[in-house]
Image (cartoon, rainbow, N blue to C red; front, side):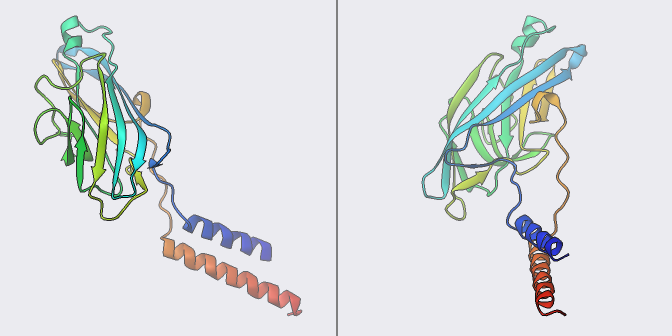
Length: 235
């Protein structure tokens, strides 16, 4: 019985020690890859599979309240049954992702996209960081973005955090880690990042509050100590 109580106490304290982060990165973290592939039906019954990749790599925390990393984004859409005009009109026009903690400013070296904070992909979902052609919005539109087969890479810098950081979570929402918008001649389409069009996994069950876990672990340890004392003293 004493061993069982001790085991429960240690388990409770281990759970209290931290919770899993969706996409926590530090200096030296392997590239983070978001993969979109979505079957859509557009105006006039056009059938298409819209595909794109987003890769974050080379994370650099300079000992200040900022982080810089390389971004590569690509429009991998294939022609399939589309006409050539329909295919050529299929542009990846904007994308975004969530962060924790939140940045106070963002800058980039892209010649294709401009970066913004705290935006919404029109009619879809809010993102903490958005990149799109044009002015201060996340809509894309016009003739900007990436045509099929095109890709671009650049440096993105997030700064202005409340304190110095050595890590950042680039996907705090289990169902909306990253989002993308495709603008086409047969419609506008937005979706989030589950690979190959699969639905995102359900969020994990809620855990007890850390303070509750700590109290439970401490209480179980105290109980185990009392039981051991009683055994040693024949009580």
